[in-house]
Amino acid sequence: MNDVTQSIEVHTLGLTKVFENGSHAIELFRDLDLVIRKGERIAIVGSSGAGKSTLLNILGTLERPSAGKVYYGGADVFVQGERELANFRNRNIGFVFQFHCLMPEFSALENVMMPGLIAGLPKSEAKAKACDLLDRLGLSQRFKHRVGELSGGEQQRVAVARALLLSPRLFLADEPSGNLDGRTGRSLHELLVSLNESDGLTMVIVTHNQELASMMHRVLRLKDAHLKEERGERSVGGLTVTV
Image (cartoon, rainbow, N blue to C red):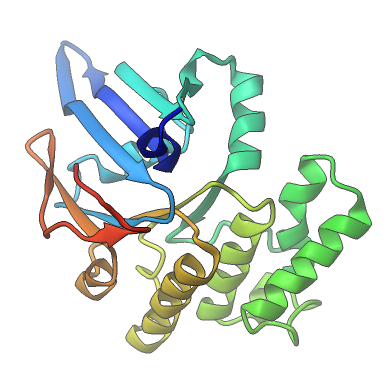
Protein backbone atom coordinates (compact mmCIF):
# COMPACT_ATOMS: atom_id res chain seq x y z
CA MET A 1 0.00 0.00 0.00
CA ASN A 2 1.54 3.31 -1.07
CA ASP A 3 1.62 6.56 0.92
CA VAL A 4 -1.23 8.11 -1.09
CA THR A 5 -3.54 5.15 -0.40
CA GLN A 6 -2.64 5.19 3.29
CA SER A 7 -3.57 8.88 3.50
CA ILE A 8 -7.12 8.24 2.27
CA GLU A 9 -9.81 7.78 4.94
CA VAL A 10 -12.84 7.30 2.70
CA HIS A 11 -13.46 7.43 -1.00
CA THR A 12 -16.45 6.91 -3.26
CA LEU A 13 -16.66 5.73 -6.85
CA GLY A 14 -19.65 6.37 -9.10
CA LEU A 15 -21.94 7.14 -6.18
CA THR A 16 -25.55 7.53 -7.33
CA LYS A 17 -28.81 7.92 -5.43
CA VAL A 18 -32.24 7.72 -7.06
CA PHE A 19 -35.58 7.74 -5.26
CA GLU A 20 -38.61 6.17 -6.90
CA ASN A 21 -41.74 8.33 -6.56
CA GLY A 22 -44.57 6.46 -8.19
CA SER A 23 -43.90 6.52 -11.91
CA HIS A 24 -41.19 9.15 -11.52
CA ALA A 25 -37.57 8.77 -10.48
CA ILE A 26 -35.87 11.55 -8.52
CA GLU A 27 -32.12 11.57 -9.02
CA LEU A 28 -30.33 13.37 -6.20
CA PHE A 29 -26.82 12.80 -7.50
CA ARG A 30 -24.92 10.56 -9.90
CA ASP A 31 -21.40 9.29 -10.48
CA LEU A 32 -19.88 11.10 -7.51
CA ASP A 33 -16.18 10.37 -7.02
CA LEU A 34 -14.96 11.83 -3.73
CA VAL A 35 -11.71 11.40 -1.83
CA ILE A 36 -11.63 12.28 1.87
CA ARG A 37 -8.13 12.26 3.34
CA LYS A 38 -7.19 11.54 6.92
CA GLY A 39 -7.30 14.64 9.08
CA GLU A 40 -9.27 16.63 6.52
CA ARG A 41 -12.33 18.70 7.34
CA ILE A 42 -14.84 19.22 4.56
CA ALA A 43 -18.04 21.27 4.29
CA ILE A 44 -20.79 20.16 1.91
CA VAL A 45 -23.10 23.02 0.96
CA GLY A 46 -26.02 23.47 -1.42
CA SER A 47 -29.67 24.39 -1.59
CA SER A 48 -32.31 22.57 0.46
CA GLY A 49 -33.34 19.35 -1.21
CA ALA A 50 -30.11 19.01 -3.19
CA GLY A 51 -29.27 15.73 -1.46
CA LYS A 52 -26.62 16.85 1.04
CA SER A 53 -28.06 14.95 3.99
CA THR A 54 -28.61 11.86 1.87
CA LEU A 55 -24.99 11.96 0.75
CA LEU A 56 -23.88 12.29 4.38
CA ASN A 57 -26.10 9.36 5.36
CA ILE A 58 -24.54 7.21 2.64
CA LEU A 59 -21.02 8.15 3.74
CA GLY A 60 -22.12 7.16 7.24
CA THR A 61 -23.68 3.87 6.00
CA LEU A 62 -27.13 4.87 7.25
CA GLU A 63 -28.44 4.60 3.69
CA ARG A 64 -27.32 2.50 0.76
CA PRO A 65 -26.58 4.10 -2.63
CA SER A 66 -28.54 3.18 -5.73
CA ALA A 67 -25.21 2.56 -7.45
CA GLY A 68 -21.53 3.07 -6.77
CA LYS A 69 -19.23 2.15 -3.92
CA VAL A 70 -18.01 3.60 -0.62
CA TYR A 71 -14.56 2.46 0.48
CA TYR A 72 -13.11 2.66 3.98
CA GLY A 73 -9.45 1.71 4.02
CA GLY A 74 -9.83 0.17 0.57
CA ALA A 75 -12.78 -2.06 1.54
CA ASP A 76 -16.28 -1.58 0.10
CA VAL A 77 -18.47 -1.28 3.20
CA PHE A 78 -21.76 -2.02 1.48
CA VAL A 79 -20.88 -5.64 0.76
CA GLN A 80 -21.68 -6.22 4.44
CA GLY A 81 -25.06 -7.29 5.76
CA GLU A 82 -27.14 -4.95 7.91
CA ARG A 83 -25.92 -6.30 11.25
CA GLU A 84 -22.26 -6.14 10.24
CA LEU A 85 -22.82 -2.68 8.79
CA ALA A 86 -24.38 -1.48 12.05
CA ASN A 87 -21.39 -2.79 14.01
CA PHE A 88 -19.00 -1.11 11.58
CA ARG A 89 -20.90 2.17 11.84
CA ASN A 90 -20.98 2.15 15.63
CA ARG A 91 -17.23 1.60 15.87
CA ASN A 92 -15.96 3.75 13.02
CA ILE A 93 -18.31 6.68 12.47
CA GLY A 94 -19.47 9.44 14.81
CA PHE A 95 -22.63 11.41 14.03
CA VAL A 96 -23.97 14.77 15.17
CA PHE A 97 -27.26 16.11 13.83
CA GLN A 98 -29.03 19.48 13.97
CA PHE A 99 -31.31 18.13 16.68
CA HIS A 100 -29.04 16.42 19.17
CA CYS A 101 -31.05 13.15 19.34
CA LEU A 102 -30.10 12.66 22.99
CA MET A 103 -32.24 10.45 25.22
CA PRO A 104 -34.04 12.78 27.64
CA GLU A 105 -34.51 10.17 30.37
CA PHE A 106 -30.75 9.79 30.80
CA SER A 107 -28.06 12.10 32.13
CA ALA A 108 -25.37 13.71 30.01
CA LEU A 109 -22.89 11.10 31.20
CA GLU A 110 -25.22 8.20 30.44
CA ASN A 111 -25.94 9.54 26.95
CA VAL A 112 -22.25 9.74 26.15
CA MET A 113 -21.59 6.26 27.55
CA MET A 114 -24.30 4.65 25.42
CA PRO A 115 -22.27 3.86 22.23
CA GLY A 116 -19.60 2.21 24.38
CA LEU A 117 -22.13 0.04 26.19
CA ILE A 118 -23.72 -0.96 22.88
CA ALA A 119 -20.27 -1.87 21.56
CA GLY A 120 -19.66 -4.08 24.59
CA LEU A 121 -17.17 -1.96 26.50
CA PRO A 122 -17.04 -2.60 30.24
CA LYS A 123 -19.19 -0.04 32.04
CA SER A 124 -16.18 1.31 33.94
CA GLU A 125 -14.26 1.91 30.70
CA ALA A 126 -17.22 3.55 28.97
CA LYS A 127 -17.74 5.81 31.99
CA ALA A 128 -14.08 6.81 32.16
CA LYS A 129 -14.01 7.68 28.45
CA ALA A 130 -17.28 9.62 28.73
CA CYS A 131 -16.07 11.59 31.76
CA ASP A 132 -12.84 12.50 29.97
CA LEU A 133 -14.67 13.71 26.86
CA LEU A 134 -17.22 15.74 28.79
CA ASP A 135 -14.41 17.32 30.76
CA ARG A 136 -12.52 18.18 27.56
CA LEU A 137 -15.67 19.79 26.14
CA GLY A 138 -16.20 21.96 29.20
CA LEU A 139 -19.03 19.96 30.73
CA SER A 140 -17.38 18.60 33.87
CA GLN A 141 -20.10 20.20 36.01
CA ARG A 142 -22.92 18.71 33.92
CA PHE A 143 -22.31 14.95 34.22
CA LYS A 144 -25.49 14.24 36.16
CA HIS A 145 -27.77 16.75 34.45
CA ARG A 146 -30.53 15.40 32.26
CA VAL A 147 -31.01 16.69 28.74
CA GLY A 148 -33.80 19.08 29.69
CA GLU A 149 -31.53 20.75 32.23
CA LEU A 150 -28.89 21.63 29.63
CA SER A 151 -28.76 24.62 27.28
CA GLY A 152 -28.89 24.06 23.53
CA GLY A 153 -25.14 24.51 23.22
CA GLU A 154 -24.50 22.10 26.09
CA GLN A 155 -26.77 19.52 24.49
CA GLN A 156 -24.82 19.71 21.24
CA ARG A 157 -21.54 19.35 23.13
CA VAL A 158 -22.91 16.22 24.77
CA ALA A 159 -23.86 14.97 21.29
CA VAL A 160 -20.30 15.67 20.09
CA ALA A 161 -18.87 13.79 23.08
CA ARG A 162 -21.17 10.85 22.37
CA ALA A 163 -20.06 10.81 18.73
CA LEU A 164 -16.40 10.69 19.80
CA LEU A 165 -16.63 8.02 22.50
CA LEU A 166 -15.33 5.16 20.36
CA SER A 167 -12.63 7.27 18.66
CA PRO A 168 -14.24 7.13 15.22
CA ARG A 169 -12.22 7.33 12.03
CA LEU A 170 -14.80 9.69 10.52
CA PHE A 171 -16.93 12.39 12.16
CA LEU A 172 -20.10 13.41 10.29
CA ALA A 173 -22.30 16.36 11.22
CA ASP A 174 -25.55 17.51 9.61
CA GLU A 175 -26.29 21.19 10.32
CA PRO A 176 -24.74 20.89 13.81
CA SER A 177 -25.31 24.57 14.66
CA GLY A 178 -28.56 25.02 12.75
CA ASN A 179 -30.62 25.05 15.93
CA LEU A 180 -28.29 27.31 17.93
CA ASP A 181 -28.03 31.08 18.33
CA GLY A 182 -25.09 32.86 16.70
CA ARG A 183 -22.84 33.04 19.73
CA THR A 184 -23.42 29.43 20.78
CA GLY A 185 -23.02 28.29 17.19
CA ARG A 186 -19.65 30.02 16.88
CA SER A 187 -18.49 28.32 20.05
CA LEU A 188 -19.45 24.94 18.58
CA HIS A 189 -17.68 25.76 15.30
CA GLU A 190 -14.47 26.58 17.17
CA LEU A 191 -14.79 23.36 19.15
CA LEU A 192 -15.07 21.26 15.99
CA VAL A 193 -12.02 22.90 14.40
CA SER A 194 -10.10 22.40 17.64
CA LEU A 195 -10.95 18.68 17.68
CA ASN A 196 -9.82 18.34 14.09
CA GLU A 197 -6.53 20.10 14.74
CA SER A 198 -5.70 18.51 18.10
CA ASP A 199 -6.83 14.94 17.38
CA GLY A 200 -6.49 14.77 13.59
CA LEU A 201 -10.19 13.93 13.43
CA THR A 202 -11.45 13.57 9.86
CA MET A 203 -14.77 15.36 9.48
CA VAL A 204 -17.45 16.04 6.90
CA ILE A 205 -20.06 18.65 7.77
CA VAL A 206 -23.25 19.52 5.91
CA THR A 207 -24.10 23.15 6.59
CA HIS A 208 -25.85 26.28 5.35
CA ASN A 209 -23.70 28.33 7.73
CA GLN A 210 -21.12 30.24 5.71
CA GLU A 211 -19.00 30.98 8.76
CA LEU A 212 -18.65 27.28 9.55
CA ALA A 213 -18.01 26.42 5.91
CA SER A 214 -15.22 29.00 5.73
CA MET A 215 -13.42 27.21 8.59
CA MET A 216 -13.14 23.95 6.63
CA HIS A 217 -10.21 22.84 4.48
CA ARG A 218 -12.52 22.35 1.52
CA VAL A 219 -16.02 23.47 0.56
CA LEU A 220 -17.90 21.22 -1.86
CA ARG A 221 -21.21 22.29 -3.41
CA LEU A 222 -23.85 19.73 -4.36
CA LYS A 223 -25.79 21.15 -7.29
CA ASP A 224 -27.61 19.62 -10.24
CA ALA A 225 -26.67 16.11 -9.13
CA HIS A 226 -22.93 16.86 -9.12
CA LEU A 227 -20.41 17.71 -6.42
CA LYS A 228 -18.04 20.55 -7.26
CA GLU A 229 -15.19 22.23 -5.46
CA GLU A 230 -16.26 25.71 -4.43
CA ARG A 231 -13.06 26.86 -2.79
CA GLY A 232 -9.44 26.20 -3.75
CA GLU A 233 -7.12 23.43 -2.69
CA ARG A 234 -5.37 23.34 0.64
CA SER A 235 -2.59 21.27 2.10
CA VAL A 236 -3.58 18.70 4.73
CA GLY A 237 -0.82 16.75 6.43
CA GLY A 238 1.60 17.82 3.73
CA LEU A 239 -0.70 16.56 0.95
CA THR A 240 -2.67 18.59 -1.55
CA VAL A 241 -6.33 17.57 -1.50
CA THR A 242 -8.58 17.65 -4.54
CA VAL A 243 -11.96 16.26 -5.52
